[in-house]
Length: 256
Image (cartoon, rainbow, N blue to C red; front, side):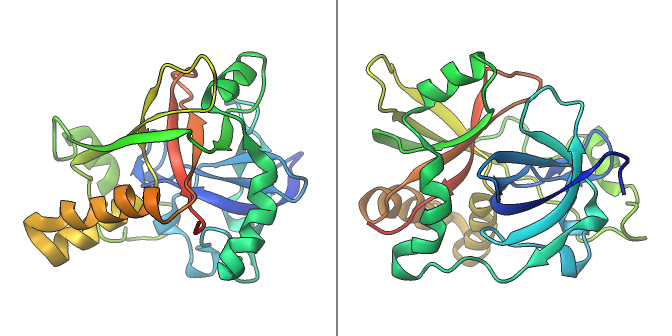
């Protein structure tokens, strides 16, 4: 156990697609809402390397030991990975996601512009809001489609969690972005990258199933269905090295 650690219960709401780690092998940005109703970012979590009994799902409560990290973002905590204890099953999607809404909707901010203003005053660097309007989903090819030699070397090293790594992490050769305006009188529009694990896995699955036609299926879900059939909210978080830059780290989309 960490010296001076504290135990927290967290509803996991965000898991981003893994990336090569600066320390370790690979990490996924993981965040959620504590039982006290506060945002928390848990780092580092090499999710694919965790023991199966600790591989939580989104909207599942977990109990963890954490300490405040050296990361200056107020909601960032270092997690003791072997302390992860899963509590129950993921919250149900029945009754139009009522159980999930009960936790998430009280945290909804008025806009991304408001979240940035709060951040500048020392407020949270995580949040959730409903965009006023979404213009489009952009799918932008990566300039380099494969991992660099340095990144491959990181991904090839052994992890403290097991002797042999799982299947090598695949790089998603596209950046997914939403263009939108938020509900703020002075909003001039935003274009934010989406790092949600769900989108990365959708790309991988549909590319395998549909080949070159994967984009049609992808856009049907994340552009048409999200805007027509779902009440779409964006989970967002900032980048440590560029604190003014926000990313969409997850989607919350109960049915309309």
